[in-house]
Length: 129
Image (cartoon, rainbow, N blue to C red):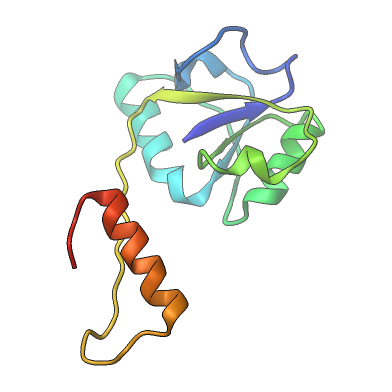
């Protein structure tokens, strides 16, 4: 999860930062993180300003690029806009754990491209089929 915003809105610094550095700047939150962000604000008693919650990443980044606030999006998202005037910082707190799963019917043969993809992912994860 990262913060993405214009340099005038995103607090200065490098490296990971906790969500509270945003202060009362409007947050444009990807729906995937809405509960995490709300719970973090409640648990830490930090009045976060959730201006918008959306299922779509690109509008959040576009609105952040237009100065409406700071987007809270997945780490891959800032690379979707190129070139971009947005700066981004990894969010250190709250921590979001997520995982992925590959599911297929082992009784049916996968197409060559899919089988290669599964093999690459398994090798990267240090697992065997």
